Length: 107
Image (cartoon, one colour):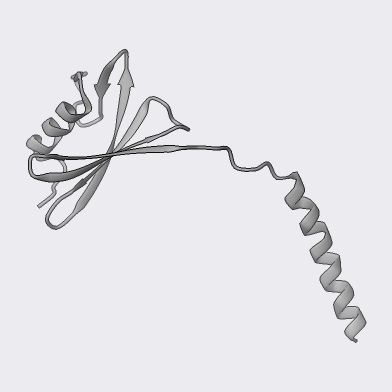
């Protein structure tokens, strides 16, 4: 009985360890985090090396935390909160406009 159970375990564990050798290692993805205060809100800009032209923005309000993405196109920054193609020259300017517009529903 014990031998049969041992063979079952080994029959499962050995192929599983071989599969681990075939799986590629995680790429050396890096994240760059920048913190700021805009309009009395704590802001965190996260740039991920997997998506080079995209920045994730996290805004902390009194009650809620919200996040949205900003894309960089031709040295200008755009987001889905301004669907008519408004482009901004800096991340901070765009984030301030999104906060002022009240679309994040922070408080």
